[in-house]
Length: 249
Image (cartoon, rainbow, N blue to C red; front, side):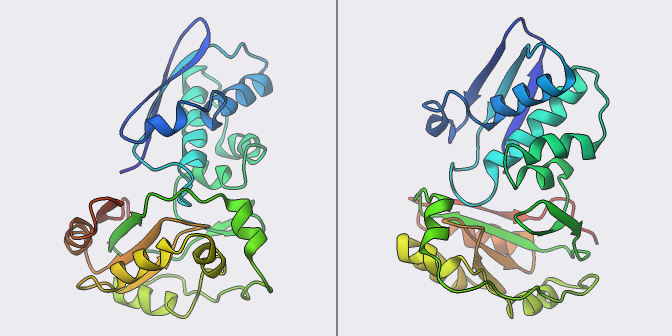
């Protein structure tokens, strides 16, 4: 369900965009994929020559880090194409200048993020579980959500080393909240509708907003339950349901 970035040699730097969600990026000539390519070329002392291709499946400005993941994928792809062989940490340092979420996407594995996203640690070991994502087709700018927020942030959560089941994970996470959820709903009331719909789905263990919104997620016992719940949501929404890729047994 993620976006796909590929790169091949070329005489100039260019980006071709396709996919169901690609139209939203066509009016953005200097998106994160291109900015990542330029930043890597500058750091390596190379000409920024490459033909990049983005298959866009994730909605834009939806609070699930799609743009950051695309930038990170661009860094990884060009690191191989240009034969740099740079380690993850060096790519992440370049990514940090592009956005707070890019370094964790360079690693592309579960992580615990702190600070503004630049402090990364190991996440608890995850069980297999079903995941549902739903967006009401409302773009929501992160700065606006932070401006609407009032009060402080929740204290640092105490988490175990891992969870044996989806139910155990959801039970622990149910005690936590997304501090941006309330201000996001004040700007985009449709988020509350999405959360209510996910929560009412059979077998849903937990429903929360992702990031600064407007995408929300649901945790389910297995991939089949998440997929069935996604299929039952309003067709006007962007939805996906399945299993978490790479979850441990």
